[in-house]
Length: 231
Image 1 (cartoon, rainbow, N blue to C red):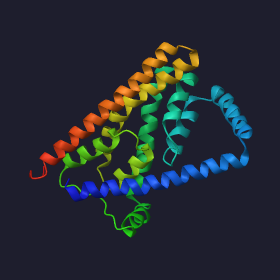
Image 2: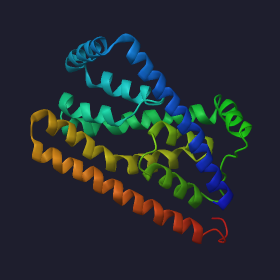
Image 3: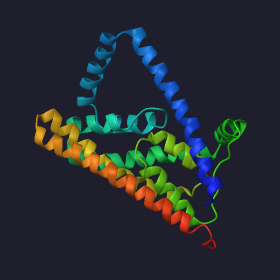
């Protein structure tokens, strides 16, 4: 992946990141309009419903809602208290696979012209790749970078036209590193096991630091391979 492509990918992230901020602001405005008490009542009712509902209802909703600007981590934190750590860790991977399939399909099919128009209208370009190895490096770098919303990562990767199977395998492998910490945190905090909760928080922090280090190393590998022939 050349320098221009990497630069363009950062600009694409900025455009969609700004969109996410606007969406979050609209959500806060809606919360202000309906009132905190009403919102808490909805949350309480939803909690009671989910406790008695089959797991596929919760994880199906997670898979569908987080295709849009809805964060994944709250679902992971809630999953532990609702279903337990091991069942949650078994249900989450297929839910994320479904989420990724929907996101990839949307951004590589009928939504692509609209999204591409937004990007190009602002003078940006969508990253392109010379080899499968470059695709893998780019997917890993995007997925492992802390702080970028998951739906935004999926949009960028889909617009970049990465291979679907490669997209799924690398996405799940990288993302599950974070998932364990959040699920354990939610369950331990709910049960009052604060020692375990502190361990889970430490795990998330260490994972984030390690992810940043790995992301930097992947960029160095990409730089060193710029002059190499395509696979």
